[in-house]
Image (tube, rainbow, N blue to C red; front, top):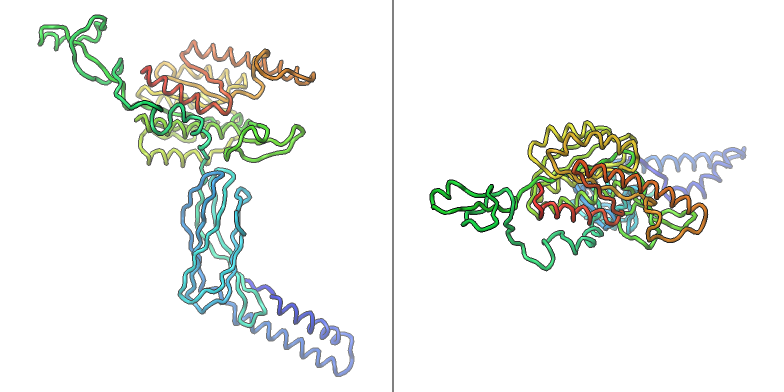
Length: 467
């Protein structure tokens, strides 16, 4: 409890206290005694009011949900329930502390006209999170007047509310509407595909062109005619997404305001070239991971997640189901770029030891640094023979062929910039060719096409039955 002088006390001090104090100091006559009496009376009344009101807010409590989930850029409700088990309070004022990463639609404070004894009142605060992550609402502040109105009694109530803010995937889902997301392929029905899979489908009579390896010799002996085994595509395969959140994952992605909108952009910034929207490469990696998890769930595959920087941070075994998707989402929503170089050797060793069954490994890493790319290439043979590896990274902003369809340079600086981008593009092209010799494909999409390309490559792998 903390008392603060209220307006009536301030007015009394201004109109009575200051003149009385002046007389007490400068007057030598009988008015000095009267002034001292007035000052003593003011002090006594204020002290008694403060003493009688010291426990005025003790019967008041506040309750809030233990866990609130939200999405960046989308409005969410925070409900606070105030209850009073003591005497009626004519006026109760409350204040909600809000993080700088939240935008609040209404005021951060409010007033309850009356809180009767035994009454509960629920108030709603509309907040819009601007950045994903884990936040805590640890307290709320309340205030009421003292019994005689000379003081404002304030108190801090403890809360234990956890706020989990997840990435917004609405933009990626719109881009993937024509490929696949939640309802299978557009314009078609889900049918069983029979082909050169690994799950046994049925026996049928031999037809010209069937591979001799597929002939079932025991069934042929029983029926006295050639019989062929047919297989169907495996319904349950393991897909792992490996996310690198080392220093390179913090590379900024900038676009002019108006070219791209959505809640996946952290903030805007004014520069010499105009206002820009800014996010990081890691945000795109996390969006791609959740999109692949959704697609794998609808395809009936098991999905796993691995994150690493200087070491392997999280390793979640591949499973399926909505509950497992929530586990993946809770594992990645707090990831932030770390100022360390990626270490690929411990990652490859962990994948080699823990993944005994052949799986599809989608690696989201930044290989734009030549030294990092060299370390990655040297560590890759530990897993590429046992597993199918796909590598995706966001194309650096200027890493393009010199004579591409981009705008022509207008200044000397732009010419040097495009030449440097061409050299970086050629290095990445050479790296792609080197990885192809190991059976690994490297994707270099632009940031807005990362999810679409990763999903397309995953579906192609599944349709071709490569795992």
